[in-house]
Amino acid sequence: MMDEVAEPGSAAAPEEQDNSIAGKFGERTGYIVWYSDWKAARGLDKYGTLHYLSRKMHYAVLYVDSSVSEETLRNLQRLPYVKKIERSYRNEIKTEYERNVPDKTRFYGL
Image (spheres, rainbow, N blue to C red):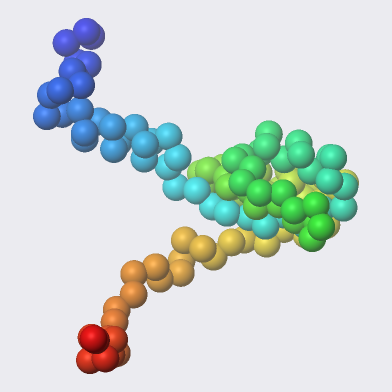
């Protein structure tokens, strides 16, 4: 088993590092959880990665592993302080943009 571990300077180390990062997070689903009690909402970290809690707007951003998201969603809906749960569409939004309009700043250079 000791032979399977890659040395930090070897060529296999970056591939293992990328796989461990992907394995650590996996496929995640984001949820916006609307709540009524801020102190109780701090306990949402038991259900996934609690990214943000808003005191003023009374919502939380929670990331959950996709393989258990349906079960977690049912458990969250049973909580007395949870008003509403919305799925985040952030992973479905296009983040790579194309520039169709030419950059005019180079024509007005000094």
